[in-house]
Length: 237
Image (cartoon, rainbow, N blue to C red; front, side, top):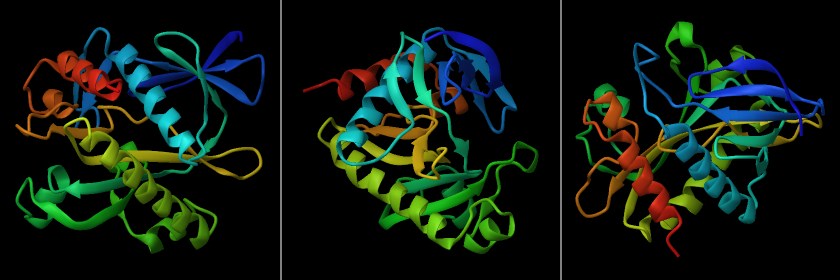
């Protein structure tokens, strides 16, 4: 598969055209950003780790019936993916209170939520990716209809139902995570983007040590070491 021109560069990945108009190459970057890119950094090897982690998790989800844009891994940093039109809604799924949920509602950090919470955020950097409700999604034409909106909510919860026990067996708490979805040429909703320590919060089950991008956000350090630990546990039989 031939890599052609750069189509898009985001905070964590670059997307390239290929000689097949329906396929793209996604290249994971070593860049780190936080607080809507107000804090920036770089961790050599982070892109490779996220590529490996996301590939492993997408393959697990595929086996459980979740349709994704992933076709295969091309090299240490790159995936071959289906071209999709990204739905401009970030689906954030929460199991334990932390981050913006704690700040907004005053729920003590570490509180286990009584049920899985799925929230929608509008993908717009200029607006700071605001929290939105179902009606906002429709007003913004972020989805075609309520059925698609309900579909991405249900998929977010289903992904949580698959990954939460998977990580629990590996002594990791899946605190929360962000997923994105896209529409393929036939209008099918596919899981897109990535699932990695950049888009998830992982805490060690015994110590609550943070093993995700919060280490960068909060200046804890050893980001790569934490990501390596997550990959090691994912690959654990």
